[in-house]
Length: 277
Image (cartoon, rainbow, N blue to C red; front, top):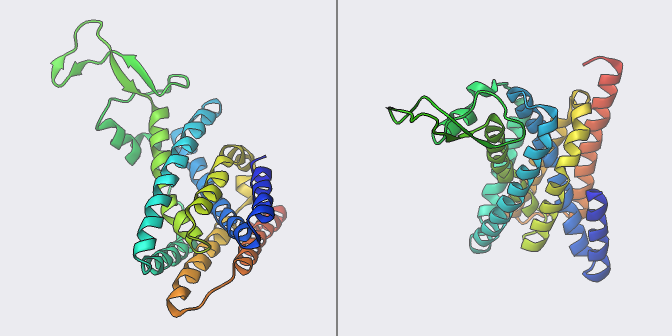
């Protein structure tokens, strides 16, 4: 549904604002949509490591996506303001994207148990965390043995975070890291803040539905990260090329992005079908 909404929005832009604006929106949307797939794999890893029950994942994704929409707005406004004053920052963004793309190609997936994760330790610095999930609640009132070294008054209850809140914090912080890549990547297509944010927003809004589709097929997309890494490297090169007065058309960018993703998906499905991976 969200993909259809994005395509209808792009068609409206084409009819009322012209071909160039429509291509910029489509290019930005495809970049963000492709990079969002990597978010989904990370979300799946987070849910698995924390042992989040299936029925509670909707709630985490719901609030996580709302937070992501707000964070992207901040990133876009800040990024556009910086780029408008310091054009050279685009070249720096490009170098960062290339390095992150190369890093993704050679990175190995690291799994960390939820109870020993940095997210759990971070939340525990500010509020006690229950040992088990308490339904779909993020916080509960619960007795504890002592408060700041003093014995707890009989029957007195204090607010505790649940592991589900820890998962939400980890998801939000992970999205901040992804925004550092995705927002500059869209700048390779346009610096129009409305186009950058709306293309980001529509891609992000479809993440919850995409997650539950991808969850069932995650083991089949074994080469997907290489397609995403290619998108990162390409958009980075496109930004760096501006330093040398070289430009790549938006239509050309869209073609490269679609080709990279199509090849990675096709190769993944072919490899897993044959059982060679």
